[in-house]
Length: 299
Image (tube, one colour):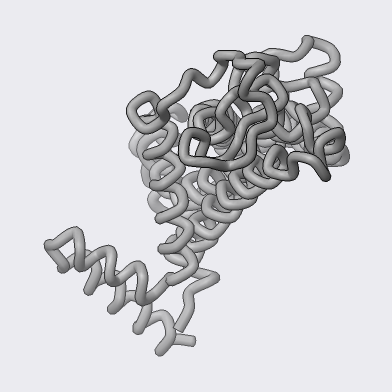
């Protein structure tokens, strides 16, 4: 085990010493090929979402009844939907919706989980006991069930979807961060900081939070893929993003069943987009976890 750790540390030191960006990319490909492929998919999705207005030739919400249900062609690369809208254009604009919802929910949920997890571990006592029981209750519900309940109460909209996805992420991240913070709380340098009269806020912000950033970053990258899948699921059920906003789950809802035989491209392309996005973020998140978590170091 010691030899494995030494080899991993040597690889990390080698990565730090490299100056060129291409060298770091080659290192990532060699050590984490699936993670590198996932990063490529993430970059491609971000590129499509950001530059959608410059790539797509059509308006994502413009209805054209003469062009309804056209198969893929030169004018419409992936065909059109039941309203004559270009599917390729809506896929690219749908990437914007997926990334906005996914990244926002993952960042906010993980950040709140970081704050609550560190606070719970450092304070302990009654606060920790109450918080852990609340987390137990929240984690007893599947993510999709809790998200459905929240959206049903507040109504379907982009903001409510983000809130519905964010809330279930909080206890998951808080539990992971708390476990790391509990070990740090017993370290000698924390006792030394207390002996020097440092305030609790300074100890937490200067000495504990920086040392739990690795699990925090891992949770963010993992949650983005989950959030994209949840957003697509809610939109498919009619409780997420509403028409005419381009969204992958909404595109599936529009014609997946009714036009499954006459126009299969209506369901194929949004399904492929969702699968690639979730796969990319999950693979990249696993690579980040393997590189930052010492318990999962590879030979």
